[in-house]
Length: 162
Image (cartoon, rainbow, N blue to C red; front, side, top):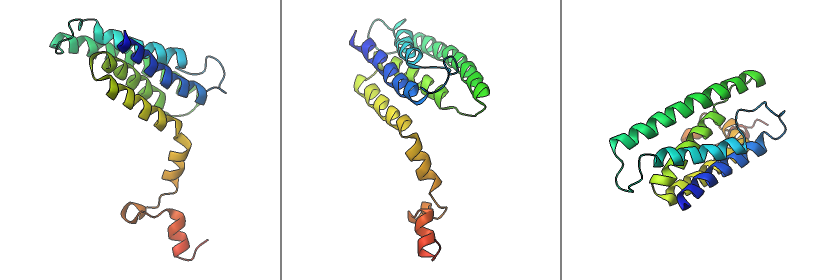
């Protein structure tokens, strides 16, 4: 039961971040929110446990069930995210990728190392939440920064530009 609780918690964590980020958007205009992500984490856990009730090593049959479930889930989420992108007139893969990772980590929470699943969920949520700072950091990188660790402003200042 603890493993399913973790799968649910992973989905709730991702869903809270996604829901908070998209809270200003009109109802029905987003592909997934807190409920969808929570259910997605559970769905991954259930898919992983359907044929893997013995607790032993994963069999080929287990892998086929998990893989087929993941493929079907991903296809549905991709369709909804594509429609969301069209409606909002933007291009973004973040929600689709986050949803797929929610399913995968939910599955891993049930059949793998719970600590790894939880740690990856926390790291992913931080990456999702730090969207603006990360985009700003990338925007301020200069080409030479990859070699010297300088930002565009550092290079301008060193060259006498303001």
